[in-house]
Amino acid sequence: MFISKKLCYKYALTTFLLFGLQGIMSLGGGLTTAFPDFPSPIPYTAGRSFHLNISIMWPLFGMMGIVYYFFCSEAGREIYSLKLIEANYWLFLATILIILGSLLLGFNQGIEYLEALPILKVGVAISISMLLYNLFRTYRASAMPKSRATLVSILAGSLTLVVFFIPNILGYSHPVAEEFIKFWVVHLWEEMSLELLGFGVLAAALVTLPGMQRAVLENVLYLDMSIMVITGIFATGHHYYWIGGPYYWIWVGGAFSAVQIVPTLLLLYSLVKTVKTKYFFRLGQRETIVMAMIACSMFYHIFGAGVLGFLMAIPSVNRYIHGTYITSAHSHLALFGVFGFLVLALSYYIFFAEIPLDQKSYQYSGMGILLINGGLLIMAISLLASGGMQAYFWHVSGFSVAQTRQVIFPWLVLRLAGGLTYTAGSSLLTYVIIKKAWSHFPLCFPPLQSLKALPGLGFEELHGRFRQLAVTAGRLEQALE
Image (cartoon, rainbow, N blue to C red; front, top):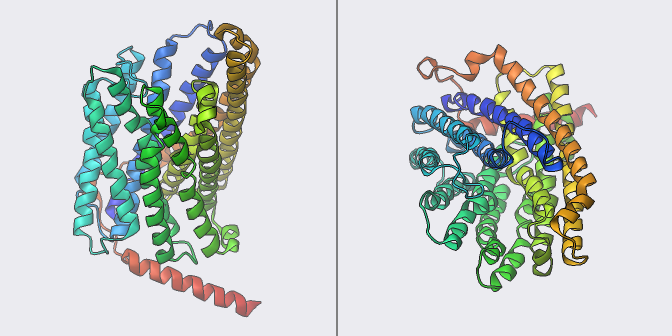
């Protein structure tokens, strides 16, 4: 095993800790939304800023560790600088914690999703730049084909993370310019940069499945990358319309939003066509949990981000539902569809690479996933109903905001029940990770100096022998039948 992979265990652990913290804090937000007069030590505005920022940061932090873990396998060598992997972890973690702490204390720039102070944004920019530099130097030194789709996809995602974020460090005197640049992170990070990273690492994980052909997967991945870049850029158009751009942007955004579902469908189709179904019934406990979360990611990606996102972006619909709770339902489902569940799945895969998964932890993990899904669906249904009624009572019945809120109050209580269910699931899943990390702490935080490269096969040779083993097992099964 590459030393680089061992350094990624702490990334996976910290990802689950931040994920669990988000669940607890979001429960307070749901409570305040339903009962605004409920006493709380944290002001609603501060709590909302905390929730929005941590919802971006924990998937990004987890994706960073996942990228390091799979990139070295695909490159067939160690990551260029192991010290940079370590420094990247501590710098980014410190930056995230300071950002979250400062938001709770009221230090807020007032730019939604990007409320952090400029100096703290510099810390984020340095962190993602370190990731890009380390990956690029590894790519340059790799003996693997430079056209390998997984490597290209991950590098493209890392590069666009930096390109889209750095302009947001600067200040802009005109609010339209400020909002225009903001959506390069709020929208393009999610629907382009993190998708490029996510599809790259997912393809790197799926290529080891029996029956999966790298050539087929790489062709699909290159097609997906082209679609993601084009649609990601132009689907942002409906945001430009609402911040003061020309009217045609709402039509551009709506048209390209319709195509954003295609990359996921292509990847899912290639997986179903090449991998035998019976393989999925022979998975071990760790792989079962991982595949369950990947399946959840696909489901929410298709229906939450793709279908719902397209329906919302239709110009004749978008004009009436913009700013309603329907947008909130979409953002919750899209976050877990595009990268939330994928980050959890692969972080779980990494964390239990060497740590044994016992039966009780396996059962708790499965229960946690069910509760998370139940909570998300309850929240989505309640928010969609609330948003639909908001649009109707505002634009048709002529109700005021206060009158409409009285009508949707029961649905906000249901949304709170969904949040409680979600938090129970996220806390249970985080508990499993914390319990295992407590008894395997040296494995999660190994001193870099003490790590030794384990003797073993290279990735390509190991992959080839694995395929041979699968073929032999298939022949043996036929002989026994």
